[in-house]
Image (cartoon, rainbow, N blue to C red):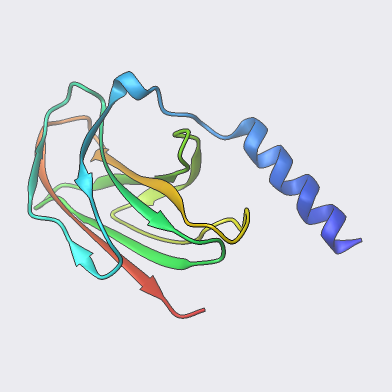
Length: 128
């Protein structure tokens, strides 16, 4: 019964989750677990910047986006840019288990006020 409930909850989440338009996302590069990006400049157009990373199902991760004195919006999106989780400046999340192979995910970010800025992104794998 619990498995049915969780499957239904996951399906509903996918139906109502926000998707990012690829035209609104500028890919800044890729990150690996344990890595912090060099500060990157993000303009207000396109609307979002992103780093891509590979992860396995059930990986627990923490993403931190530093934006100087500003507050950053941060989201995790799947390979189709469907939002899986979001928050401000720091986000902890467990990747969905879709099988044994690694999949591409995105760390999508911007200034919460849609202003240009410099951002440094840290991707950490946490304990299971």
